[in-house]
Amino acid sequence: MKLYRNLCEAVISGLQEIFEEKKYADKVIEKILKSNPRWGARDRRFIAETTYDIVRWYRLFRELAEAEENDYWKLLAVWCLWNKAEFPDWEELAGVDRKKVLARYEEVKSERKIRESIPDWMDELCEREVGANWNQELEALNEEASVVLRVNTLKITREELQQQLEEEGIVTETPSEFPDGLLLEQRQNIFTRQAFKDGLFEVQDAGSQLIAPFLQVKPGMRVIDACAGAGGKTLHLAALMQNKGRIVAMDTEEWKLTELKKRARRAGAGNIEPKLIESSKTIKRLEGSADRLLLDVPCSGLGVLKRNPDAKWKLTVEFINRVKELQLHILQDYSGMVKVGGALVYSTCSLLPSENEQQVKTFLDKNSSFDLEEQKTILPSQGFDGFFMARLKKKS
Figure: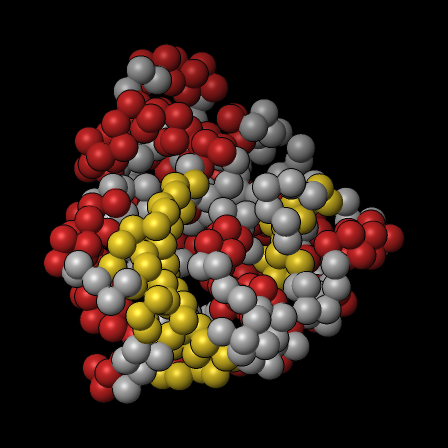
């Protein structure tokens, strides 16, 4: 593999924005790739994958290069050695020696937090909460995330879409445990395809695709998605309900609901009513109105680090503690929207029992009108992102 200076400079620029300006990695990479439409698919892949690799292995690469905090060129040099890439004779890469890097790795590889490239506090917290499984889950979280499509069954079947994509040279697999999912054999920019513009699919991780079915919706129901965001799960619910009934999609941020409206139009989902949460009165007005309520609450995001590796370096204990308070607040205040005989699903993309099972237990201890029907954890070691979901039935 030969390195080109302009592509490497793009990677360095991206790393500066991610680490120094605290910007989200996916947004940074998207902006960089849009800045030069002349780059081909291989160049774009190099920029995206190299940036993500260095972000993912930031702590390990710094240790191996013995680099200062913002010396991204040295991290790129270690990346080259790690990936057996041709090492250009550039001044910025000088001083990084293969023998030294390999010797340093032998010294540090027994320390999990360095070998797996994770902050001390995060390693300690997850070991304490996840227990003996943490080793394998951490290894899985350092793997590259798969690209998974969710077929929009309002417009096409999975078999039809698979055939259509195959005719365009896009090979996919059909994982049996995810009935609406198509797994891309090779990573690529799928958003430029006509099938996406026609609303035939959305990009949605396989684990995430299990949450909407867990709600057990039926056509004609009144469903509230109270933390809808840009609407990935809302759109899945619309398809499961065959566009019949009503989905009230709520969020506290208007720009997310604007994006949801755009996606719903593309998907042909006509049973979605976006509603901005302006105050507690918005929630109060919907009391006892929902057959089903989805609470996909804000969380640490520790289950999706393979997709968002920059979160490792941005998360704090203080943030996780604040978000746990918010989770309980949402559960307590929003649960009143469920009618008697209805059900709610509480879900996170976290691996921590303190955000998952313990939050559900705390809620049930205070709310005897609800019973736990089922709860499920999807682990990163199963091949996709990590999620938790619990379904609670309102009996009185």
